[in-house]
Image (cartoon, rainbow, N blue to C red; front, side, top):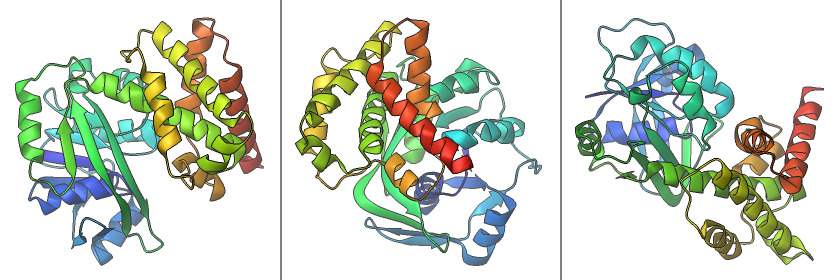
Length: 307
């Protein structure tokens, strides 16, 4: 089976590299500058799970290839996702399985505007990684998990083939029969954590310890839960309790990736995460004072960044 990985950055580069390490036939779809960099230096992974450097197979958008791909992994940020959809279109056949690795849910609907539903699986990942100053991928914690599965929950023959293809990889790659629940649960967690830490410009410890801080955290998660339930999202009855428990148990120095992006004056995924939930809330006439405050803060940052 042939695998196309969109991008060779912190997510796609890491998991794609681990697949190559496991002798999977992987091609990376990259920009011209990144292609030149990879041809010169190779793709360098520096990880607590072991380093790996190799010269990857690469193509750029629009480049013709004498075959189509069986699996396409999309690990871009949401603000690059529409371009990624355009870029992969020439390489998708009726049998190609597209597995996005982004946080959130909105990107599934974006994919469905271009490709048949049967081409689109569910996916998510847990990994602390970034691209260093020399283009190397730095993976810094024990977490390096990629989860995928049919959105229907069925254990189909094609998903079994993907599971077999990915087995033995030096990363935790798991097939899930509850992938949509998994995606919605992570969506809740990442939206709540990024919302509260960016609002207070603080790691989680001082927020928890501040007067009314934990109360605000709890209200945010229950507000998100109300939105998700009214839309029919497949979430657990007591999911807010377990999410808040995770927040309470986190190291006090923990920051969200969105907060770190803001500290670097980088782009953020406010519309994709908090903004999409607000769209759902407005559609179903749900009051969301905390989420609106969070989104207003993020939108203020984006407006100031453009000035």
